[in-house]
Length: 131
Image (cartoon, rainbow, N blue to C red; front, side, top):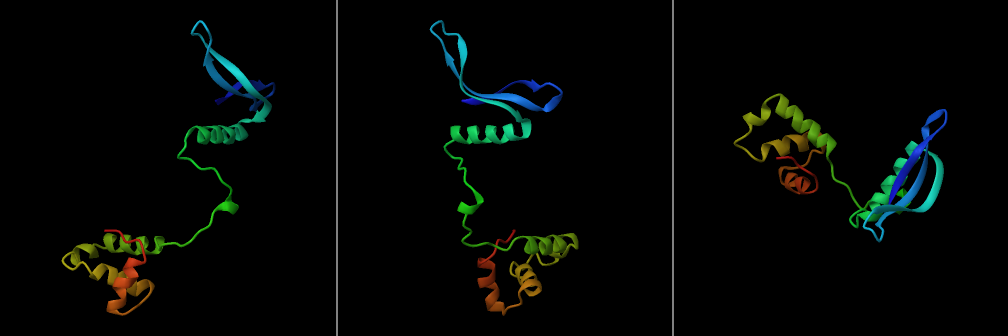
């Protein structure tokens, strides 16, 4: 099942005539198309949304839902940690501390959420850290 455009509306290239069709083979093994639903004239931008829904219908790994049905149970720090990490990299400070695995997380922790030395290990477990 797929979306088929059979032409544009006269005078407007942004609107096409769309149908939902299904391919099959007839008795002579010739490929034919069966029109399941005639959608009529719709904008190409809306047709792309319909194509995405039809594609999701074919793929069992794809789930379509609305934003209201999405629940966030937690999050990880990412952007602020990556920015600081990239600054340390740009300033070539990572090479300076390359012999000490714990120094870079301590520096980033001290900039974002200063904790004790022992608290850094718990803090690192709670966030996404780049190696």
